[in-house]
Length: 131
Image 1 (cartoon, helix red, strand yellow):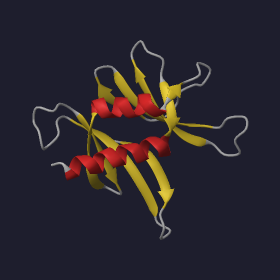
Image 2 (cartoon, one colour):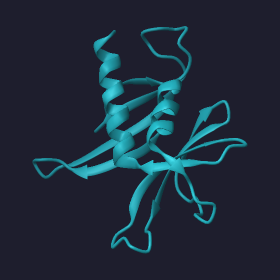
Image 3 (cartoon, rainbow, N blue to C red):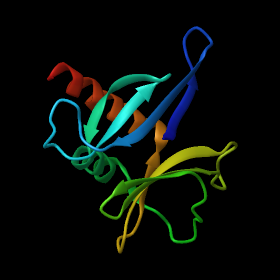
Image 4 (cartoon, helix red, strand yellow):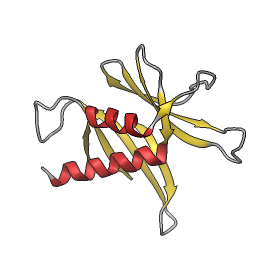
């Protein structure tokens, strides 16, 4: 399980969004592995790995080679990993959390974790409505 977003909710509570790999979605045994999205340990829904890759390719940019990746990592299968890392650029006052999608042999791509979390939550909710 990988924490991809934490923020303070409207009532002052800590809201935590996590993802984990599930072997196959419960709605369709032939669908293959998916990424299960949870908010505060409640299941929001499952997102196909193809959708995860699509979201990352849509929003993420290539990661600069001089950035060292340190942080928790989730193996997605087929050579894909999703990793959270905290980075503070020269112009930032505080560090920001990023998600990095890496595939063996390709340049890793990264985007702010809050942006990717929002997109994955949207797809996860949509997947629950279509079941």
